Amino acid sequence: MKLIIAETKKEAREQVKEWHRQGLTVGLVPTMGALHEGHASLVDAAAKECDRVVASIFVNPTQFAANEDLDKYPRDFDRDCRILEGHGCHMVFHPEVAEMYPDEFCAAVDIESEMTKQLCGKSRATHFKGVCTVVSKLFNIVGADKAYFGEKDAQQLAVIKTMARDLDMDIEIVGCPTVREEDGLARSSRNTYLNADERKAAGVLYKGIVAAKDKIDRVPQGGIATAESILEVMRDVINTEPLAKIEYIEAVDGMTLLPVDEIKKGVLIAMAVHIGNTRLIDNFTV
Ligand code: AMP
Image (cartoon, rainbow, N blue to C red; front, side, top):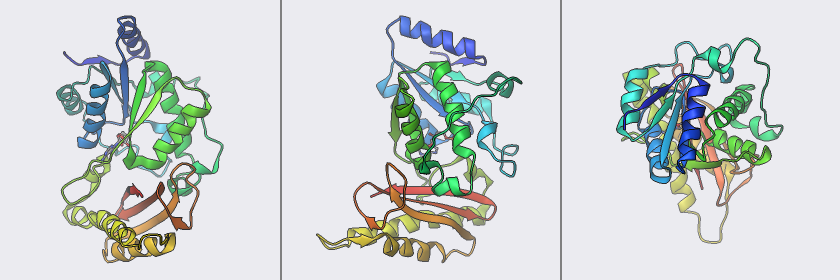
């Protein structure tokens, strides 16, 4: 089936309504484009579980702060369409900024809890408000049955699950595992910012994860690892790389995202590390 390109909200909404009239289920994969294997894995998961798959490609200005990389964010729509088609996506929703945010636009969706103030929220104060607003709009426009998000952005996934639960959104949120490069670096559109030396150095994030998992595995049965002992191992590994600058490495409850002192099942260990000028995030759940 040829990929349908919908540039207006009306086109996207009417096509999904038509599929629903035919009794078909619809999965949504929200993205900002510059697609890679990580995005493709979400499309694959949606195609497995739903009759029709819609991907959105929209570099959402409201989730970028003024000093962030909105203008230089990579964009290649034709290549993205080929990837989507190759993975069985049926429609791409690709609106202009004015289609999503006309001049009179004045609404916002936000989560009033500590969870958006932790981890990335400390340095990106308005980021999750922008994410919740655009994702709410995408849910309302597309009207999908399920939406697929990557565990690579663990805080985003937790925030969206909370938003959908608290605002009674009639959509199932599905989390999908992080897809990695051969050296373990999580695939990310921002990896294209890295030069050759930085790309090599970026492998240290995953080395930190491996070291932490190894230390957790070696805790004797019945014993408890303190969060600090595990975070210290990660910091030590990452600090061996001169190009890496840690923004945060934290252990938090996987649901509330509040800091924890002990490592137990369900704890999320998440980090943001700058490699040169590029900010990378990664995480794992115990
Ligand atoms: P983005 O285009 O970066 O906004 O990402 C769109 C979606 O793809 C989000 O749900 C991300 O969590 C997900 N994603 C990005 N990178 C990966 C990855 N390496 N593995 C799995 N999902 C990913």
